[in-house]
Structure formats: C-alpha cells, structure tokens
Length: 99
Image 1: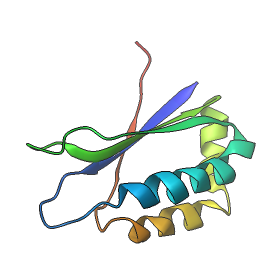
Image 2 (image 1 turned 90 degrees about the vertical axis):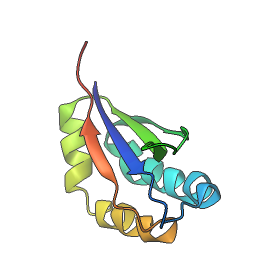
Image 3 (image 1 turned 30 degrees about the horizontal axis):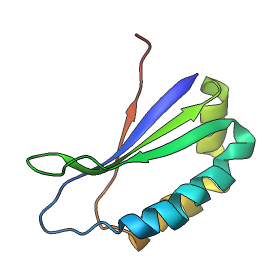
Image 4 (image 1 turned 45 degrees about the vertical axis):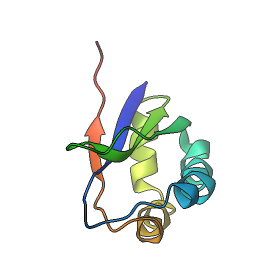
C-alpha cells in the first residue's frame, strides 16, 4: 500500500470550510481516484492551535502504481482546482512510510 497525507496548515488569516470539505471534496477525491486504486480517503480535524492543521486527509492507495495513476489521471486537475472552494490554504502533501 501507498499512503499520502494532505495537510492544511493552520493560518490565522485563512478559513477552512469543513462542511464543504467533507460533503463535496472528499467524495470528489473518491470518485476521481477510487477506480484507479484509492482504497480510502479519510479526513481528520486536529486542533489548529498552536501551529497545527485545520485538516489532514489520509489517502491510502493499493500500491505505488495506483498512486501514480491517480497523479496522472485527467480527473486530478479538477480535484486540485476544487481546493479553492473550501480554503485559500496551499495544501502540503506528505508521503507515508513503512514502519
């Protein structure tokens, strides 16, 4: 499996629409990447203070090739473009590693 984490760092000058994120963005991610091998996309909302994140999304893919297929998908620009609909924060993408 391949796991990525998409984080949205807390910014006192930015907002984050949790309702839109959970009701529209996460389903969009699942529709776009599910057929390519996305196993799950789970949103977490840790405390943003101090120096935390408004949200963290864990995306688990069946393997590295599924992750690469998602990155190359013609649906990926729509996923990325949707971010502006719930925040002005630039997401940070981190790769998970094996323990």
